[in-house]
Structure formats: structure tokens, C-alpha cells
Amino acid sequence: MKKYAVEARRVEILEATCEVVIERGFAGTRIADVAKRLNVSNSLIHYHFESKEALLAAAFEYYARKDLSEMERDIELGQSATAQLWRLIESYVPEGSDDVEWMLWIDAWGEALRNPLMKSISQQLDEQSIGFLERVLRRGNETGEFQCDQPRVSAMRITALIDGLAVQFAAHEGVVKRKELMRALRALAAFETGLSPDDIRDGKRGPRPSTTRTSTPSSPVTGGVAPTAITDAALRQLLASISDAQLRGDAPGWLALWGPQGELVMPDGAAAKGHDALGEVFTKHYGSDRWTLQSPEVVVFLADESTGHATGRVTVTERFQRRNGAIGSRIATLHDRYERTPHGWLLAGRRYEVLD
Image 1 (cartoon, rainbow, N blue to C red):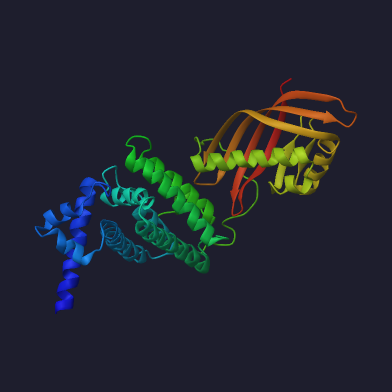
Image 2: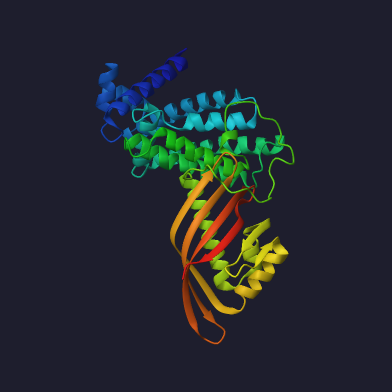
């Protein structure tokens, strides 16, 4: 009975500490504040916790583990891995700038920089959060819902985006809207799992037919909108990788960035479709130069996130050096089509128009 009473008092102190921290923050919380909240002496608090640092760390751990336990129970209610993934994302993301749980987490990260006990507990809890997501991703692979090559790495990327955007959302009201945050998370979760953003929802979803995701070229997007930040970054990285391969004369690397049935139309009207024909064009147009450097000047993307198709109008300055040493430049517009595949965004089509 005495042991129970001691534990009950300890929990009472932890809950009171959390209340004070929510009001004052970790840095502004004193043992005297907690004692006053409970109408007890400071010495009683010290009997259970040897220092303020130990009290704050224990209070955060108590609150956070309770929060994570509730989250885990909610996740288990999802009837598929896809539904569990969506529930997990929904649970992680703050409801608003006054979300108490996130206020505590954000403050704890700052306190962890000064409090070694808090740092250790914060790391453990972050690891537990990543573990939840990794487990869901592995389950999706097992059921055939996901195509996630590295569940651990994907879990870290998703939680990193959640943490970063959630801090902006919770701490800086108006910088990012919750709708925008959720759209970015849907896009990243879809990219990591081989789904489309619209698939990430709380509903039943069985294993995908083998024909659902292919690498065949997409049709041009006619009703697209500006892509999410994640898709925009991925498409810009694709452009950079293509330019890098051209600069280095790396034909295999360049071809790997095209869909299997990729189509290319050059300024002189020469056309190619498929990797074999594209390889010949690369040898003729880029292999004949010492180097070719494409620098994007104006980039406009439109995307249909639900289907995994996008278009781009990319105006570039192209500099090159011929084998005879002559250096030249030109301005061109690349009319691109892109497709999202389980391996990321690939180039599905390009019409190359020289402007001068």
C-alpha cells in the first residue's frame, strides 16, 4: 500500500509539473511552482526528484509516453497499412498553434540542449516515433500495399518533414496552413510508398494489382496545378541530375533518368523513343562535344499529384565546347513530361526548342 501511495504521489507531481510547464515553459518552471500547485512543500518534491532537471525530464517523459501510447492505440484501429499510415500522420500533425502536445514537444527540444537528462529522453521518444512509422511501412510491404525499399530511411524522412513543418505551423501562426502541411505530407508519404497522394487516407486498401504502378510514359497534364513543395523539389533534382549526366557525358546515368518508353524530339526534328534510340541521340548530340552545360533560368511545373503526372516548361541557357575547342551558347526551352514511379520521378518526354 505504501509503495502504491508513493507512486500515486509521484504521478500527481508529474501531472502538476506538466500543467505548470504548459503555462510557463520548461525554462520558467520552478520546483516552488509545482509545490504551490499541489499545496505541498518544496521538500516533498525533492524527496521524489533529486533536482529540477530530473523533475522536468521525468514530467516530459510521462506526458510524451502517454501521448505516444494513445497514438499507438489509434493507429492499430486502421484496417490496412495505408489507413494506419494516414492515422499516424494525422496523429503527429498539430491541430493548431495552440496544440498543447506540440507546445510541450517543441519546448522540450529546446530544453534538451541544456538538460542532459531531457536530451536522453527526447532521443528515446523520437526513436519510438520513428519506430511506429517504420513498423507501418514494413507492414505495408508485407501486405503488398507499399513499395518501400528502405522503411527505416523513409520513416526518418517523413518524421523529419513532420517535425520541421509542425514547428513552423505551431510556433509561427500563418507561416504554413495545416492544409498545406497535410498536402506536403501526403506527397512525401506517397513518394516513399509508391502510392499516389489520394491513396493516403483512412480507408480499406488491399494489395495493389501488379498493373497499378508502371513505368510507361504518361500523357501530358492538361489540368495540373502547381506541385507541392516535395514534388517541386523532386522535379528540380531530376532536371539537375539530367544536366549533370550531360555535362559528364554519362550516357547510362542519363538514360536511367528516363522512363522505358521516353520520347525525345530534338531541334532538328530528330525523334527517338525508348532507351536504345535515346542512347543514339545522346551519342550524336552530347557525345560529340567535350562538354555541355544546361542552366535552368525559368522553370514552370504543373502536376496532377493524384495520377503521378507532371509537365514542365524549362527555359535554359546551354553552353558547350566542341571537340575543336570552339565554345558556344544558346537559349532553349524544354517542353517536358514527367511520371512518378516507385523509383521516383522520371522524364517521360521532352521536346527541345531552340530560341536563338
